Image (cartoon, rainbow, N blue to C red):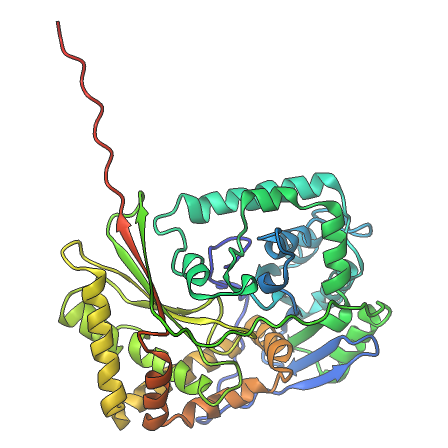
Length: 459
């Protein structure tokens, strides 16, 4: 969920793209890492092809770690991070960055909250000062809290309550698929929980999760590692580390019985379905095969599901897929591979599921031919390298991978993980994870139209 503007896509963040293109089939991103004495991990990825920089600060806290009875609090807190500090009152952060030709944004996910900026390199001191300033403390006051509670509630109205389908393919499906509260509660939050958040909640959350030892700072672009590390020390080194709450075990096994839920939608024009399967754990041998399998089945117009369900049998109007709220590489707890489709009124959820099962069974039995596998991998690699071309996306990706995997260099390992997937790996992933027993389904039907009010009889 792109919390400040869009429902769930972190997109449109780039100001300028790097002109650095890969000269071969592989491209190694330069990655230098240092940890400051206060625990802040700093990453620098130099690229002098453009006089710009991308900066990302990722905190290892998200919706999974927000307080119970405070659903949506991690998201609310992300908004509060833009409301000013004692040194930089409300509005200074945005004006300082956009006034110099830059952009900034932030988003909340289950396992992290990220804050990003991109600007001419001349603005890097200002960006880092501002980020360090709000890492130290915020301007905690009732007015800002009430204002942002109202902003988030309005965002929920616009993006969920008054939208066709209302994010059921990522909000509701998680509530049905997972058992533990950390994984299944609504990260957007209930109005009651949001309104119940207090200034003490805000202060404690910043104290517990927004210290330097729970953060990663990444800088990509027109700086050297020496320059980047020196700037990080200049602005962040004096911030003391803070104790973080003990880690929570939110792991869950695969599901053992299919769950089917039917919902109604008063705003939708056609019915829809969301079918979700629990994913393999991060870093497991099946993570990359499952990522390639997801692309094979539902990654665009050439995918198996699109060709079979949309074009072939004409059961659905579209096929889209998502991995929770992130990507197949950026999660640190249970997540889902979800297929979302609008279907024709003369079709049905049962027909779509039967067709999906049939296509999955073919993959389990026959695997995937070499030409198709190469095409799928090539598309995934192209998308990966294209993402890393942008200095902002590169900084953000490196910071997230360092936060979740403990290793920013995973960015350079993912292409090999993709390339190494075999047809047998894909068969194993399909056989293990894309089972009926591990599946959760929501069938979003059209709500019955209200009958027109009776017309008064004329005398």
